[in-house]
Image (cartoon, rainbow, N blue to C red; front, side, top):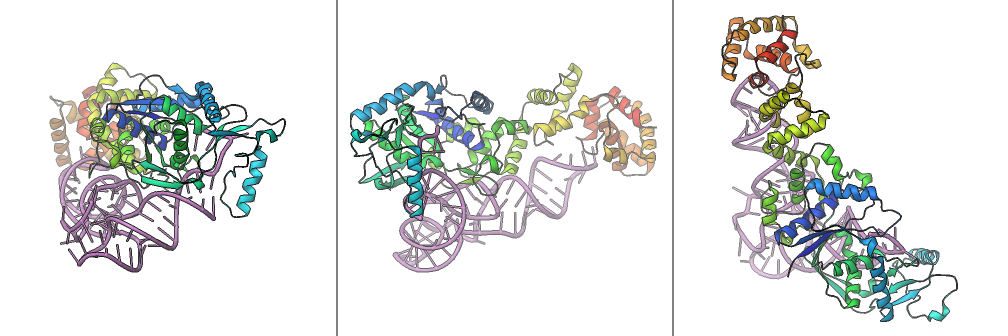
Length: 462
RNA sequence: GUCCCCUUCGUCUAGCGGCCUAGGACAUCACCCUUUCACGGUGAAGACACGGGUUCGAUUCCCGUAGGGGACGCCA
């Protein structure tokens, strides 16, 4: 059987971390099994869905590198089909009209709550004669769900779960205004799109029992189900916008690489022995549902950052140069570009994010007058500047401008002055980079080139 | 309140009855490397929620308890 999965976000906001992981798992599952990964925008809530949110979700998925097969489907365009299914169920006696008003139902729930009763629709119109329908009220259509027996879901992650049918009430299929509810729409769409495996957040687990009943009522085969545990915030509470959940684009803006994000998200709830660094190609080979854990995970930014640092170190220098230019919002001159690439190896092993990298890249982007920060300035006292002046003489006389010769020169200078190498190297670093922290200073000098290095030295040395 | 799910170091996890003196990773702390910071290396500290069973033997199976989470909409 050909595998078909789908990711079905509702466009009511950005794509958060939990949704991104669900999308990743679906994508990985499809790629592993050579199946299709479909994208369906669940925009049936016309009041809360926005085009901006749709764009944000699409952009985030694209950035993450999770490409979907075929054009994305919009649930709202299928309302007619959903309604037709509801009418079919009604005609078959598997659904019925209910004239209870929202206010009436709210009161019912209040009463149930007050009496300590389970809160659910009491079936007041299930067997009532439609002739008793009040005038002026449009009815909803509810599923006539079985009241005896139990419904079992064979979940690929959670295992077999059974719920008594007496726990499930008659859900609304079609609203009073004729629009379909989510419960109806997902089932119809999953069926029509040929979805074979549903992979979604565990918050949908209890919905599944209701959805299964719709599949049964229509006589449709049900897809496989896999409910992935939710991701919690660092405080253990539900990961919501209020609890610090950010959109995927926020992580991109924090300077994270999509491959690091994928690796991190993958390890949240899924494992392959002790493997931690799992490039996407490897993940496709290894991923399957049986290794998905059942307990919720907390989001840990430090681990994500550590992974990002790892991928940053292995990233292509040209790509990083482009990211730096984009981050700084400038186009880099050819010689700057060349310097950046030459110095990238030293830069990238010291950065955790692209932001760090763009900041550190100043060494190779600035001209002769690089602005020293406070710590660097503190290092450049009278004595240090005098020492740099004498060092400059030696450097200017150098025939070969490579790291070994530069280091030799610096060591000779330190010996001649009777100080440790650090007493020469640190002021040199401060003068050349404007910082107290940088890649190896002789490496920096080589990348800078004799002219620029000496020019910067001239600004501070005496 | 009702139903469902979950529970191994601070965090993510390995473990699918004996290989466990419970392994790895991130974070933390030492030390080494060293011109700074990183990288890298070595090492330390750190967990099976609790109580009953089952078994020759439980982290692993079963049942409770506690704690956490989720669902109970004419939202998705």
